[in-house]
Amino acid sequence: MKVDVLLGLQWGDEGKGKVVDVLTPRYDVVSRFQGGPNAGHTLEFDGQKYVLRSIPSGIFQGGKINVIGNGVVLDPLLFKQEAEALAASGHDLTKRLLISKKAHLILPTHRMLDAANEAAKGDAKIGTTGKGIGPTYTDKISRNGVRVGDILHDFDKKYSQAKAKHESLLRALNYTYDITELEKEWLEGIEFLKQFTFIDSDYEINQYLKDGKSVLAEGAQGTMLDIDFGSYPFVTSSNTVCAGACTGLGIAPNKIGEVYGIFKAYCTRVGSGPFPTELFDETGDKLCVIGHEFGSVTGRKRRCGWIDLVALKYAIMIDGVTQLIMMKSDVMDTFETIKACVAYDIAGEETDRYPFEIDENVKPVYVELPGWQTDMTKMQSEDEFPEEFNQYLSFLEEQLQTPIKIVSVGPDRDQTIERYTEIEERRVGKEC
Ligand code: GDP
Ligand code: IMO
Ligand code: MG
Image (cartoon, protein in one colour):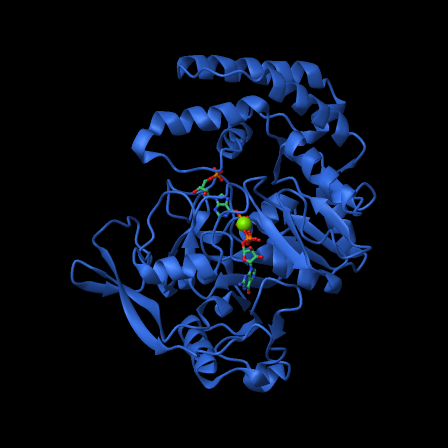
């Protein structure tokens, strides 16, 4: 068996949580492979709404194994809050959630360092989620991290050593803080974690594959926030791209099967950083209001703009996407016309390459398409799609050379429409 990977192709919040939940019945195992509680994955079903941060989005479909992989960074306190909220709503995780011993722990002082680093950057701040993600991955790479498996091996010593290093860094940054209460709750989180099974997730996942079990790897953030390929330095600190599933789970590249790439029918971004198709007018406001574009973790207003096909093509190339999933097209149900950026104009030269540096000289080149002006939120099959919507899909498939296999027309699990049921005749462009 192979591992199928599901990834955001833009700047996060594409709707990954919803789709993982929808796809989970087809899999035996769902596993997160990178990121941490900077993620906020929203799922809606049976009139209920849930936001997951560290727990894989397969947790609501009964009987599936959910794994937090080695590439994830875990905050025991936030994890405890998340798990307790789920238990209170009738979803007990202890038997179904396995945690990699090699996942790194986010310490209270990592959160302080995140805040101190941002403060030191001033106007150039990244606009992080403030969850200590960057400092935790920094410690991992500089070989100073504390891992989940360490909780069972000389934890007190490892924790105090790491904390002491952080304290001296915070002093150097002149950052004043008080973590007394936070640390107390965090240590309760460490105790809470002990009721879960810590695993050698690399061996486990490979064994699942050998045993014929199907595995879905759930990405967090999005390709344009990748530490190597995103709009650096305005990125997160992990590899959000498909290759991250290999290092974040311990699976070989030849074990990757389908790569699902998720994108919104328009674009959003939270935090700082370049966004060539950003709209500062009433159309941007309309996308924000109708799409409820406010961060699920921080509540921050998301910046909104037209779809950027230059960035999307780049993401599809880096990730090796085999099928696309388009989200939130219903947000544009009332739009008379829709724009799509097909190239960038840089000082009079058009390019469809994502440039090294994006500044105010990079101007989007748009194609305008007719809107469908139809409420699609109750549609159940592609046969009901309006003509203009089909035109939009065909245009995107032509541009992106990849089939759009699923269209999401609302936040609920049931508002999901599969296309290409008679796959072979209608497959476009490239082989899946
Ligand atoms: P994730 O981080 O990729 O899982 O995405 P988020 O949950 O942060 O943000 C996506 C938001 O859009 C959530 O509030 C979802 O409930 C909502 N959503 C997902 N799919 C759709 C859709 O097709 N239409 C609409 N209107 N909302 C959607
Ligand atoms: P999901 O999984 C959207 C953004 C932050 C900031 C940058 C770095 O819900 O799609 P970090 O805290 O990671 O150091 O912040 O990355 N960011 C996200 N934006 N969705 C996310 O996750 C994000 N996780 C981080 O806003 O700009
Ligand atoms: Mg999100």
